[in-house]
Length: 407
Image (cartoon, rainbow, N blue to C red; front, side, top):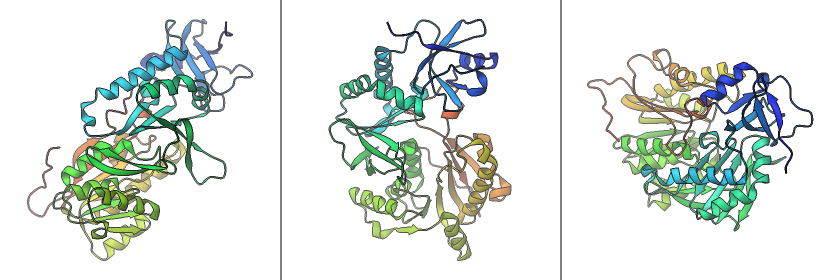
């Protein structure tokens, strides 16, 4: 028999949070940590009387010292339990009619699927795994056989693990299970072909969380010259062009992203030479464009996170406000502005305050608020999981208001 898991005694303030479905236990919510506790160890969560509240993965190195796996007595998070959770997550994705002609999507969204700290994205028959924190990394390695067995049963032929290596410029993928994964491949998103760099691409290779927002941009682009800021691999640029934008300007500091975007253009029968790919800082580009009087009918701004932690939130809100004000200055009358934020520390209402009349000027109207697609489920209590904000605003017109076509 394996030894009984060690116990974490929770203060009362944590009990209500867990009862509501929130999956994290913070350091200040426990009286003390057992000596010798290591990341990934299974612990029992107990109340002040010693009654079992649930079971969790411990991470004494993190402000989040435990991530809840199960609550109550009945479920025990062993390999069979894990296989069942993975099967349920995969079945949910198969049931999503909105995926349509799409073979790149999120198979497992960590806490949203009851598998804290574990993300698995599917790119055709390749799975790319990523862990959040040392606890999930240790757990994944311990349960490698169960995880790969579930993935192979789902038709995946290879799996890669994204990790940040010492001395590396950023996350890289390494083979983890199955066949050797390709360095890159073309995936299909609602029928659109997109090149994905599985080795060095952002996140797990692509920003799958923006899939439905790219589709919405495509539905709004007809007849509008488009500007895509922080364009990376050009997903919004490609969407705008395929949606009928007569010209698209893509702006990013990394020339490598432009090269990937241009290859995706060609996969879809488009000539990248007909559009502009500018390697520049977005703020500097907007300042220069406003000075020369250049305007666009559709502007998309999807910057990297400006608030990596709570301490940086005030500065981030100022940066969003400055960015949005600069975007408003290059919008045509009646133009559409799509503003995104992936900062989990910035809430939806706080983000909208950076898009008010003090930032954009009078007359802008909020037409839509959007967020994560349905392959990124969350529990109502896990606010941190709903990090993505995507707002669509219409600039004041000269004559009649611009109307959004329904998607």
